[in-house]
Length: 156
Image 1 (cartoon, rainbow, N blue to C red):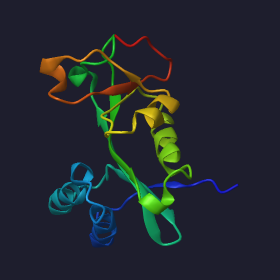
Image 2: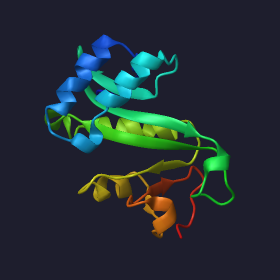
Image 3: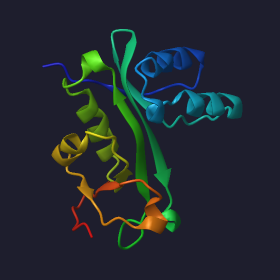
Image 4: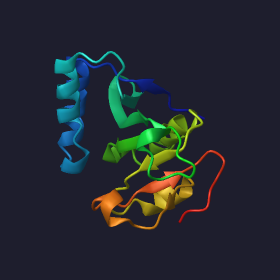
């Protein structure tokens, strides 16, 4: 069985062109073009972007940021964690394990993970073991964070 390989995406113009394919599908909240363009100008060495290629085409991607425990408002006790943003799989490649492969890659760092799910994606995140937490207006600012912890935990 084909096992998708997750790769760190280079911050370059080729990746910028690949990201334009995702923007065509109109998911403005998931647009990573601006993030990539900012990183191009900043010349960041360690790309926060990860993706899966099918042949020469990028078909799935996400941003993954490591956050220091001093910014942790989600886990008790506070700890370093990953923030998983903008997970997206092109429509013709959905339901083929690409999203799951990206999430499992993030889990392989063995750190707690926080994400903000898209509308209609709650079944996917539940299947991946993420739990919702009690909404806090000051902390969550209109987002509905989901959490995963390598050792499991009880959500508030």
